[in-house]
Image 1 (cartoon, rainbow over the protein chains, first blue to last red):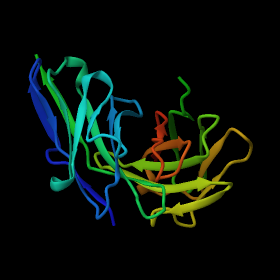
Image 2 (cartoon, each protein chain N blue to C red):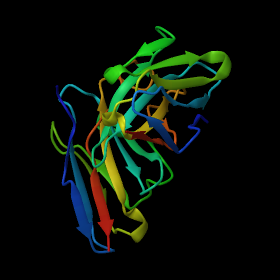
Image 3 (spheres, each protein chain N blue to C red):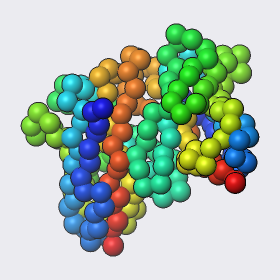
Length: 114
Length: 116
C-alpha cells in the first residue's frame, strides 16, 4: 500500500528565509503527488500537483516542488517566507491501483517568525 | 472559481444520535469523497463514490456510515448512531477524474462534528 511520510511536524522559519517542507512517498510506480495547504478553520487548498509532465512543479503563492524518483521525494519549497504562509501543509499521493483515494501525510505546521 | 461547499460548519450531537453532513460538490465533477481528520491527526480517507455507487471504502466506514447522492447536486454522509470517537473534522471532496487522471480533488471547508 502507498504511504507518505512528512518529516517534521513543526517547522519554523524567519520571514524572508527559505521554506523547505519534506515529503517522501512509497510507491513502485510513479504516483500522482499533491501538496495542500490548510489555513486555520479552513479546508484543504491545492498548492500544486505532480502528474508526470515535469519534475519541477510550480504552484500558487510562490511555492514549488521537485519530484525526485531516485529519492522518492516531493519536497515543497519557497525561496522567501511570508507571514501569510503560516499554515499546515499536507503532502498526498493518489493511489495507483485503480482506486481513487488520496493518502495523506501527517502534515507539517509552518510557523513564520517576524 | 467553483468550490465545494459543506454544511453545517459545526455540528454538535449527542452520542447515539444520527447525524447527516451535507456537501455540494463542484457541478461538473463525477467523483466524490469523504475524508475525516481527528484533531491533531492526519486526514484519513473514508469513502469514494462514482456513478451512484461506492467505489471504495476504508475500514473506518463501517455499517454506521452511509453516503447518498439524493439529487443532482448534494452528496451526504450519514452516521447512524454516533460515538464519541466520531468527533472529527469531516471533509468532502470532488474531482472531474479518478485517481489516475491529472485532475486533483477539490476540498470543502469541512464540518466539525462534536459528539457529546
